[in-house]
Length: 104
Image 1 (cartoon, rainbow, N blue to C red):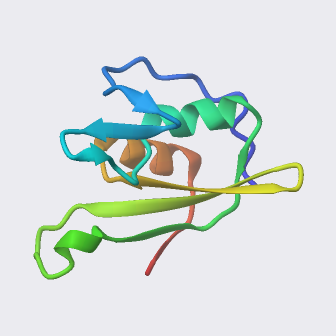
Image 2 (cartoon, rainbow, N blue to C red):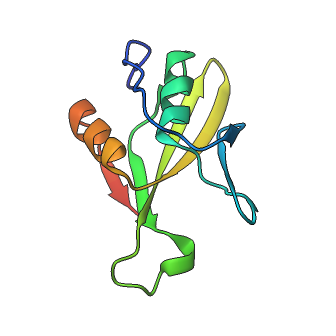
């Protein structure tokens, strides 16, 4: 497992979040944010490699669909699946930590 408890928190403009989910005009998204992932890691959650990636469900047939990254996190005997839409911060994080990414 990758221990990211010492990862620096990144200050960035983030939409209003409730339990790590972005509030949208239609309600709540099923996606978390990069800052939510960083908060979980700061709380002691650890990433269980690999990270999984797939096209966004609603745009599977679109050739330039954004990707969704799925992180499996563990802490003690608890597991948490965090799904985050592709963004520059996630790309940098994956590269910096050298995490294996498997396509679904």
